[in-house]
Amino acid sequence: MADLPQPLLRVTAAARAKISRAATSAGHPNACLRIGVTARHGARFAYDFGLIEPAEAAALDIVVEAEGYRVYVDPASVEQLRGSTIDLDDSASGGAITVYNPNEGWADPLAARVQQVLDRQINPGIASHGGYIDLLNVRDGVAYIEMGGGCQGCAQVDVTLRQGVEVAIKAAVPEILSIVDTTDHASGTNPYFEPAKK
View 1 (cartoon, one colour):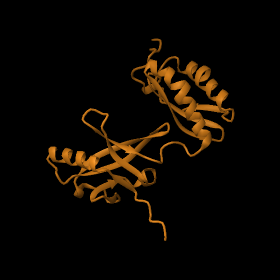
View 2 (tube, helix red, strand yellow):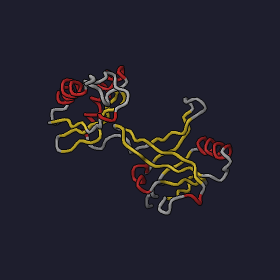
View 3 (cartoon, helix red, strand yellow):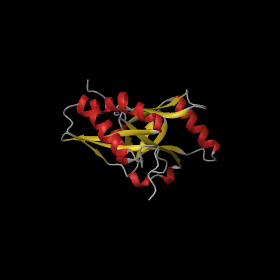
View 4 (tube, helix red, strand yellow):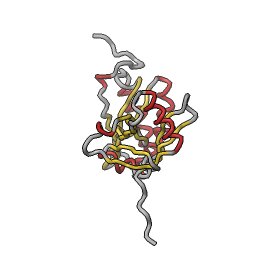
């Protein structure tokens, strides 16, 4: 017997009920969920959820009939969402829509090792300053990162990067030859250390 193709995604009954209540309370009882992946933050994806009327769907949106419920998927996000389950997270106040996505994480074992260093050693320390560092990619021995929160625009960013982040990653993952910070530090609005005024 041939294997049945895996559905693009599924929506649990709890999530369908929550979405339907939200659509009805917004005065659009026929509205459907639209989902897309907007960014990658380390090993996790960032998602965009919205309620749209079927007539408002983009021409190239992928329509998924999930257990009798219609979902519109951003066509650029199809492979990143394939096999996902949209569910209700009861631990959030009032319940929140969440995505369980088997595609999150890093397929590249080198990137997975760098992510582990960020998760276990680096991000817990800089979180006390309101900062975080996301791994964007690993290519040809170079780890590309982006800083956020209190790290974006911080006057001590070079010290953090060269004496903290780079040292820790290279020690744990010697295959990494260099770290490239892609952050736009000029747009930081709330650094932990304010730059010196000229």
